[in-house]
Image 1 (tube, rainbow over the protein chains, first blue to last red):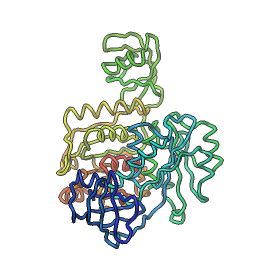
Image 2 (cartoon, one colour):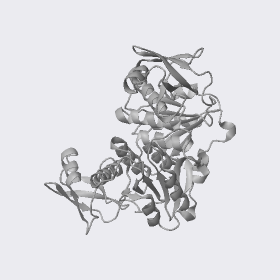
Image 3 (cartoon, one colour):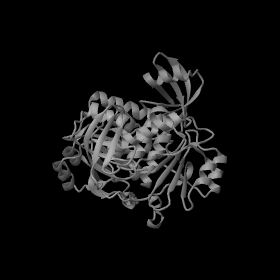
Image 4 (cartoon, rainbow over the protein chains, first blue to last red):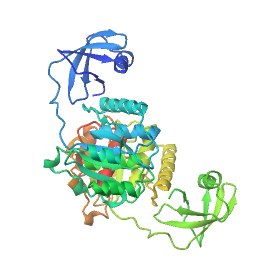
Length: 237
Length: 237
């Protein structure tokens, strides 16, 4: 499991190419040679055995086995988290942990009291953390890092049937039996909203209420953003 | 909530003293003056309003209100986690999150494949992280950092009635409805064992089996130690 490599494009006619960081990691860190066998995944759910066939500058060509190693299916509910991003290391940690736990999509949430803006740079940085966490944890589908949304634009864009939760210290405790997702609802995502350290404003809470969001609390302590996000993911997955 | 200070000894006759780090933080960072009101907690479950009465070198004297701010009771189940500690930042981060979530006790677990040893230094470092996380999250009882144990010595020392879980990828998924702790069992702790990245050995699993531990898995991905610990805490609390 430890030596897994990410393909930016799926294998085609039994061939694939590792690019840039992944190619350099394979050649310089793992010191792979022509003929070595590795495992590759393309982020859509499959992973394959592959043989190193040619090593170029910043690029490694691979012969990929025709059949993937497992069925390319991910079971279970889709959990999306819309989060007023924390900054720096806390953001990086959070993305790593949410990827390991199996969150399907992270949506940076613009809130009145939020401290970190989602920029193209932070998006790219988070995507890199996702790939690393997938390589390490054996996850074959990337966690999607969506474009950032305001609360209203997020609510407008949700698929119909999505179950909406909003983390709020004044909410009812997220009871463990309520967290379980009925089998018939596994096709629509559960979308949990996590606000900034200062909390959602009353106006934001009311916007979420009107969209049918259930206010849930996560215990009696004041949780940091990343703690709330990881705890919610663990309860829902 | 943001300016909370830790007392190493409980108030006595309406008086208390902040020592060392806490005193320096109050004077140099918060720049408190005689007469300022702060909130103090002693780690056993209570917090009080207090007035700064005298500022000395590395020491601040306080007049403490007779009655604590809330009832000094913590409700709910006791969750203990026995963990093959991760190293460095991952250890620090894990202790912070487990404190925020309300874990009662962390027991460093000696395992064959573990990488980090629990030393007096690491114990002191973890205790400092616990205090900081309590100050920040509004938690009034410290998470206890126990002395490190082998699996056998831990099992011998458990209170009777303790419910034992062991995290193992080959176990049954920790079903959400099983995680809930029946009210009649809230007086005995739930003790969850979390092994090193390389996993528990067969011998260690069998030792746990014999003690009645339930093998539980936490999903299909390979979780880092701190991720498994935080996910288990979130599911159990």
